[in-house]
Length: 176
Image (cartoon, helix red, strand yellow):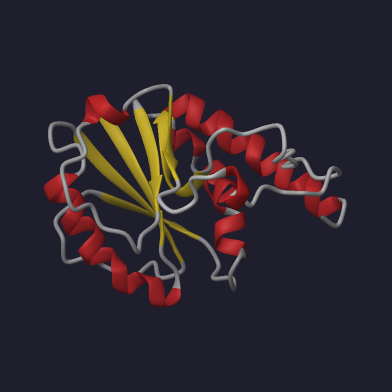
């Protein structure tokens, strides 16, 4: 099975790449063929960890743009990402501390429950009804997911990315 692990590291975030890749090499799907796609503004950056990395250039933007536009970045590399069986995004400032076994995450779509936000009263869903991301916290949503790790079957992941990017564009166009 071929897995693409996608990350974003611009400016000071390149300092996390080596530790992240080292943790991946030890713990992330060790029974599978994992390749890495790094979106960065430092095309000359080299990791000291021996892993297969493809770099894709993005311009550095201040927060929250790199988070908000991540799915737009993924669409730039759609053909490459869809050449894998599975694709996962993970924040670069994280590390895997225990084995992540492929048969536990390789499904059509894999999401991560937020470790701190567990009760409906804490859910920070979009409250504006005119937003494409609106969820009525009083009646919808049994779980709150974080964006730090998600993925799944590569074509499903890219369909999700396309929908999210389109919704972000719609909200931006409507000044939301």
